Length: 214
Image (cartoon, rainbow, N blue to C red; front, side):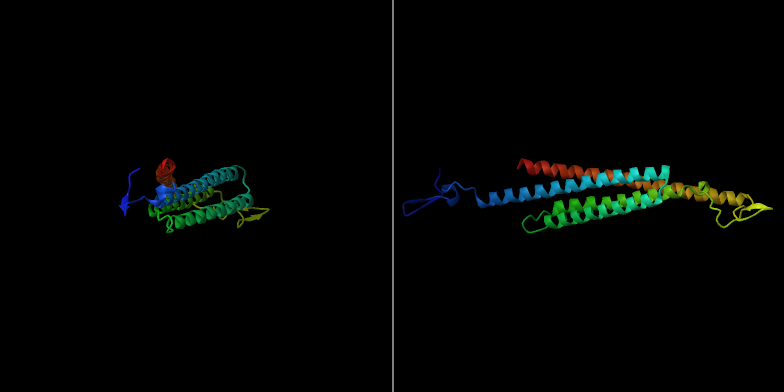
């Protein structure tokens, strides 16, 4: 082993080499990598929880549209909302941990923040899609007759009966077109958010691979 320097004829070697101990900066780097790797794996767990929640929400909505059950559906929405709130809180906590002095990984914190923003947009639009589908196209919505009158002579006197005019037909067509556009925009927005999330998640996996190889 080469001498580092010589003082008064005595060989002076680096203390860490004499004792067979790795340099302190190497230990610190390994510790930082280990912590960052652990946080990213925790983030993947959160994303899996989100995916499971979306699956549960879609299944529940499909059952609601087929069989009804408003109370059951609303209960499901409350549970899913709580799950997404918990996931968001965990990601925010992970972001803050990446910014702590012992890690100083602003790039990873920003990566998680970008995913969080797209997840928020995806959830907002997913709920909008369900609300639109639940209400249905304006021209196809069922008419409630609670306010109509009924007597034994004339029978059902519907207050909803109106003269069919060209203007009324135009209004219905415009309402349907507005509904269709809103639904289409929401669906496209969800697809765009999913694409962005997948791209960011690919970056997260690359970061994990790099940290594992260190």
